Length: 329
Image (cartoon, rainbow, N blue to C red; front, top):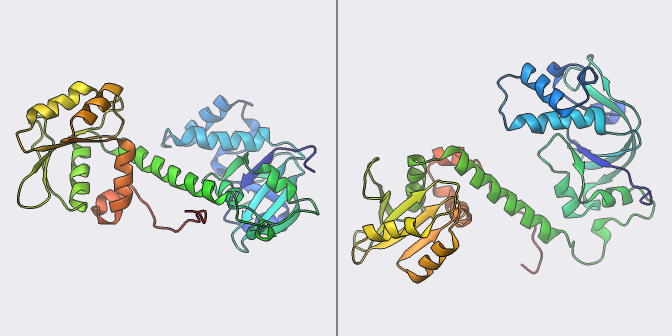
């Protein structure tokens, strides 16, 4: 089977019985109609999607139309598909046997292809990395990193991950991918929702969650200080400057914060981006000013997330979960 590998696709659905009982895979977007009537190009699919869903978010358009285009035009008969069924927590592997068909008799999943299901295995048969890849947030996607593992599962001599000797080598990598994707999500939401004064209010709230008293300066002030913070009722005073710009912070910008500080003050500079090489050197030589970049800010947010105001937790919706890590950790 693996000597002549085919493309492996992954798909999710809320209707397990449709897939398993009728031998098919399917996606929705009924209002798009018969996809085969749209010109065979991604631009044509985007144009049709914009026409049908004029209020769609711009960022979602290339993602959704890419799935629709692939489902209609890129899947080939003989390709394989991996479908994790929720009702029985099995991993189902099948072979695509039919061309794209628009089926208006279906209540929701009208874009269809026939499939011959070849094998169903428990989730425990696969490595953590393989399971994570098919846990994609997309409805329909290409399986790339662990395609060989799913193809190997079709062989009679397939050795299940649960029965393999030693630890699962993909656990550590999978945990790291989950952590990094979470950090990416948080930073994107900050960049999208908090600009200028809005970011100042958020940083002040984060400082309060960390146990500081934080006072946001009046908007339009010319002091260059966005927040004044204290650990308790007594000095030292911490002067905070916040920047939401996309470009890296320069040395001269940090020097302006230094110029606003009095003897005994400490400084804190917070940015969603990073610092230039010279700015980093300046921070290293000026220990009374601490610089926090976007990555470090996200680490603090994750650490103090539960103590943030509800409006910010709604803006950055996260759920506390346990993830597997390597035993060495």
